[in-house]
Picture 1 (cartoon, rainbow, N blue to C red):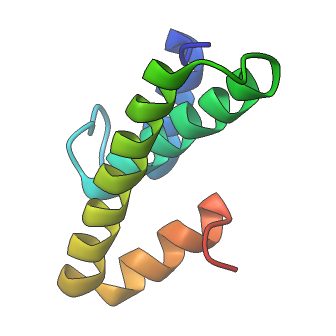
Picture 2: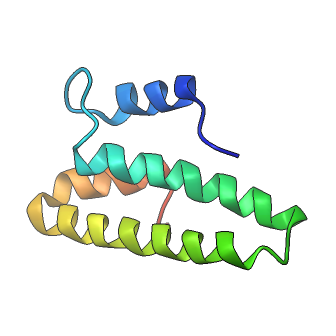
Picture 3: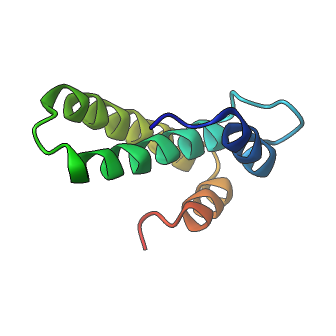
Length: 89
């Protein structure tokens, strides 16, 4: 259910602006997207898990705020990020 260390390193390498970059909005959004997708799979078999659903809603809201920040800061980076993640088609 959690993102593995190897998968996390792959995401950081793909979206990071430099080596070891974990603080940029692109990396944070990509990691949150991975966790959201994992939680969606979890809910297919655990429909009554209300506590995890609340956490999912918090993650979606936090990702939305980071994307709004990125959109206001640098529109090109925002568009590249949502295109690579497959968000907002």
